[in-house]
Image (tube, rainbow, N blue to C red; front, side):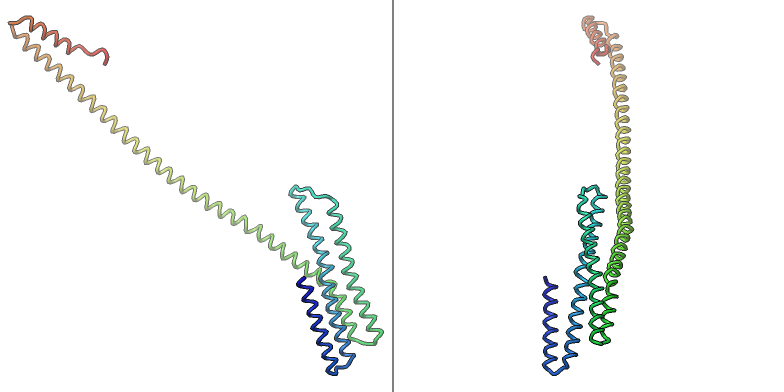
Length: 249
């Protein structure tokens, strides 16, 4: 809508300028020639935009249909036929518009006896290749963009993957170091527990030896006594009880 308003405004300005030139005393032939040139330019812009845009749009639809089918999406076959038909019609309309316009300009030029019209006819003929050439260069630009994306994005993915692997490797090394520290601390704790156990056993054995020696000394002292046989017998029984190991131990 904005483009249409812009063209209409430009046409109005040109028409006003031509009217002002005619009112200022410009020759009618010059004014008519300028008006014909402006009309031809506007018509050329329409030929280069409307049919060619529809033609390339139809081909874009066909390309998108192919992409959708390669991805596994179901697209009715009627869509291909319709888009291809529109592309053919628009291509014929665009080429026919250029050829007919050039032929009309040449015919008018030949009828009026002018010479500049042939140049306009040649421009209309040559302009037939403008949009296809522009579309070809645009497609090359898009293709180069796709190739650049395919080349750079995997490279970025590889860099990111390497960074993640490096971080994981660093974390694994830290975990291994922590595990080694825990293993060393556990081994030291085991050695301390073993040493404590051995010390406890040694102390228990030493205590048993001392008790045994004390019992023997006490028994020897008791044996030296001659009076109070009942007391001596009780003390001997007590000593035997002390020497007898506890069955529950």
